[in-house]
Image 1 (tube, rainbow, N blue to C red):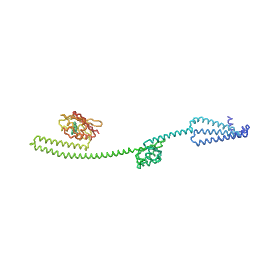
Image 2 (tube, helix red, strand yellow):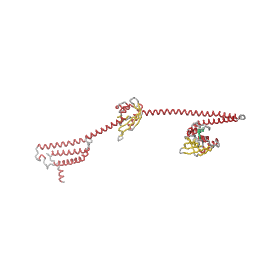
Image 3 (cartoon, rainbow, N blue to C red):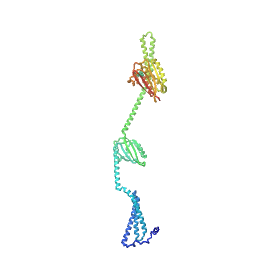
Image 4 (cartoon, protein in one colour):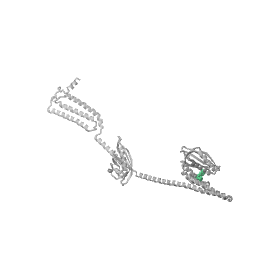
Length: 508
Ligand code: ADP
């Protein structure tokens, strides 16, 4: 330990050694050759680290920069040993020399270790040539992709465009060139704006401007000027492509010609408008003719009934006054004439009723079916005493116009009696219900109706049996009333067995 401290303390002490000039027999030439070479080596070794440091500083991203520093230190240390070797010719600083050599050894081994670690990694680094080849390959692939994309875009029937994030158009496909007859140079940037129809310019630019500002997709219908000088409707769409940080990288868009659809839609709209107008006019005319018909029916019933009444009165007077002188056949003619007058009156009344069914409003009230059927049955028993047996099997309550539904049941029950060859007609009225409707059935054991007439009997003035008196309006009045209630009527029948009419009335 004492020797170590003595070494440190006397590190610059040169007393123990003679200068190198005095060791051995140096010739002038040999000595100065040695000294000059050592100094030259030192100068070079001093310059190399400086150049390395300046290189690292100026060249960014140099791989393994610490290794460069280590190399610098190693070369500097080596250079210093040479400088000391030269100095020792005059000043024998052998202790300093030993320390410098020790430092050089440490730095050298540090460099060796660092190199040992770095070499495998360095081997994986690509040479500039390899890098260049890779760049060329990538560029080639990129160009191929671009060519493919452009080919695809050109093959599309639509106009395709792309734009920079700031909205400047930087690509148009061939379709746009052909459609507009303008050059790509003209179209790019803001040239396309001049192709917009003057009426669509403001809206399009505003929507496009907002899309660019907020980075959102857009869609607009606008007219674009074609090479033939006409404007055609297009559906223009633009979608932004976002970078990872959410900013817009570029815009991709299309413009699809929708002229045909637009024209078809316009024609359709026009046709619908025209048809609606026609329908409205027809409806107005129908309403007017209905009104005319009603007023005519009113007038007819009133003005025809009065003379009819007078005719039958005069016939009765004629019969009374000449009772003694008239023979029986004459009296029977007068009676027939009176009967015909009555029948004509009832016909006129039915006709009036038929025309009124349309205009009269249904007064909706809850009606107990059992009571309703009972009332109708009483009236009918008065009209057809001992000719029918009527079963009332109804239980439900319905919502409807009592007067109108009385009429419906009256028509159906009377038909069941009228068109019935049996001595005693049996009529059954029953009711059932579903969640939405109440069903009322009127079943008879009458003559029945052949299948081919089942639909027709509801038409006005349809009569299948002229041997029985009637107007041919009863069932059409019935159907109108049922439909006024939002319901429907159906019939099932078998000739010789009987007929069942079923009415469905909505619960609400
Ligand atoms: P009408 O006033 O002649 O009875 P309707 O409209 O009530 O007129 O009936 C039309 C035709 O339907 C009748 O002429 C008759 O032939 C037939 N018809 C109606 N109801 C029945 C029934 N219950 N049974 C057999 N035929 C019927």
